[in-house]
Length: 139
Image (cartoon, rainbow, N blue to C red; front, side, top):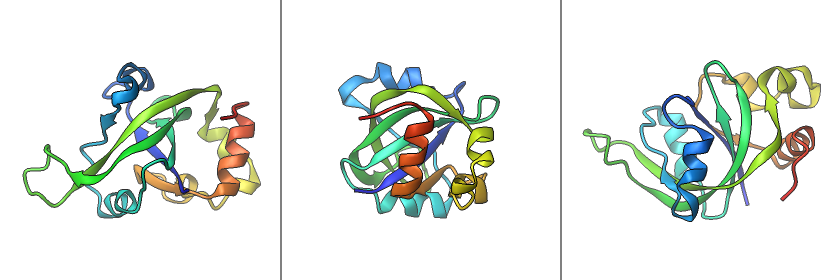
């Protein structure tokens, strides 16, 4: 199993929107960065995802899982980019902010910190465990 972080602007697609989709989940469309797209290409069904509210909130608010493998993104007229589908698993008991992540030296190498503009990033198993503890959340 692999772990990921996916960013969304809550005014465009929020954690509540994701939860409202239920077991059906939702396609993670609109990614137009090759590195983020390549990250999605390596995702497998059942991989876990931190759902991150970007822009003003800058915090991890929930956990989702990949429910469909990489496939064409119908919003991309060029046909170069694809998407995966994710479904909500559970909200974080306590959201974990970017400031909290940056203040923990154990997370200094996290892609969220090093590549702050990338919308889909890998998370190591160790980083996942640390953030789950910070968020007072278990699966």
